[in-house]
Amino acid sequence: MTQIKFYGRRDIWSDRRQEISDTVHGCLTEAWRLPEDKRFHRFLLLDAEDLVCPQRSERYLIVEIVCFAGRSPQAKRDLIRTLFARAQEQLDLTPEDLEIVILESPQVNWGIRGLPGDELTLTYPVVV
Image (cartoon, rainbow, N blue to C red):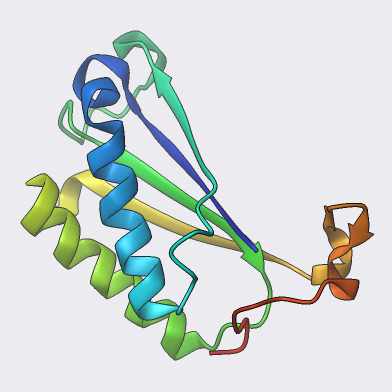
C-alpha cells in the first residue's frame, strides 16, 4: 500500500494536479512496480501565506510517500532519483524546489478493506 500527499501552493499547483499525479505515479510504477490502478493521492494545497519556506521559490512542492515497510534502501534511492529526474523533465520543477520523504509503517499498522494490512493478499510486491 502506498499513499501520496502533495503539499504546495494552491495558486501554483491547483491546475496541475493531474499532471503531478501522473508524473509521480509513473515513477512509482516504474521504480516500485506498483500497479497502474493503485493510485491514492491527496493534494493538501495551501494559500501562499500558509507555506513558509523563504529559501525556496513559489513552486516548492513536498511529496510525502506513506507506505508499507519492506522496500530496500536501493529501491528507495531509485524512486527518489526517478522522481527528481521526471519532475524536472515533466513538471519543470528544479531539485531545489522538490522535497521527497518516504514514511514507512509495518503492514500490521494499516487497516484496509476490513483487515489488518499484514493479512491482505496483494497483487504487487512490497519487497523490491
